[in-house]
Length: 75
Image 1 (spheres, rainbow, N blue to C red):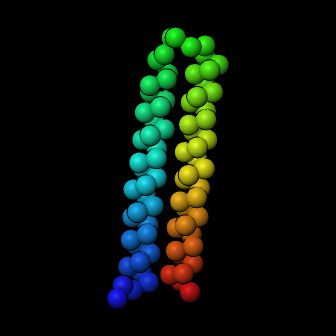
Image 2 (cartoon, rainbow, N blue to C red):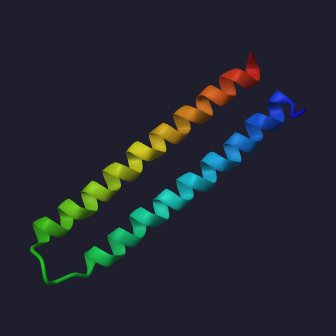
């Protein structure tokens, strides 16, 4: 059976890996759209901003999970 510390460390590792993956998805969208010339600048910025907002929302949710894991670890 895993200790609370081991469970917390596993959750932390998973959260950080998922956050990195989510950031890379955002970054790909940023790169794909920043050089486009077939759509207006406002539309490009809207696509990039929407992707960034989604990334930040997912990141906040992931770190909320990590916070709960930490609270369980110290309890």
